[in-house]
Length: 151
Image 1 (tube, rainbow, N blue to C red):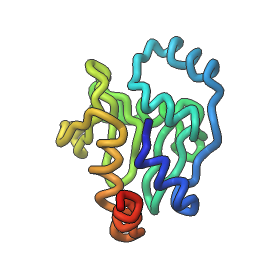
Image 2 (cartoon, rainbow, N blue to C red; image 1 turned 90 degrees about the horizontal axis):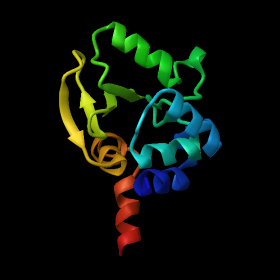
Image 3 (cartoon, helix red, strand yellow; image 1 turned 30 degrees about the vertical axis):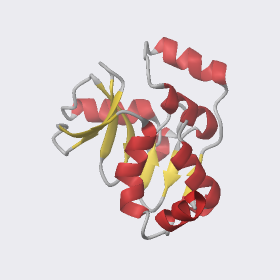
């Protein structure tokens, strides 16, 4: 579950400001109330972090994020639905772009400013590696650390 993301967060806690944890039963109730069947790796990330901010400009939304900060998944999705985003997407990330779960099949997708899919990822690790780590990895020497671990 989210190995690359959580390993980077453990090695560079100053770059990852998480909101805390979510109790499993609290999250399960929220998922049932909203009739959402989301990928398990996203659910696990929420349980461990409750979303938060990473790098300079990235936000992982969560069901229990602070709506006054724009960190909550419900108000941010409602805003984007009102701007034309299809309801078969659930945004979970804002920052250098928009990232969502495609609710029809559980794939992670990157959306452009007109809410068209421009990329898709099977897992949260795939998304993180190709979207955020590729953007910030060199700046924070994340690739070099990964090579040291492999060797």
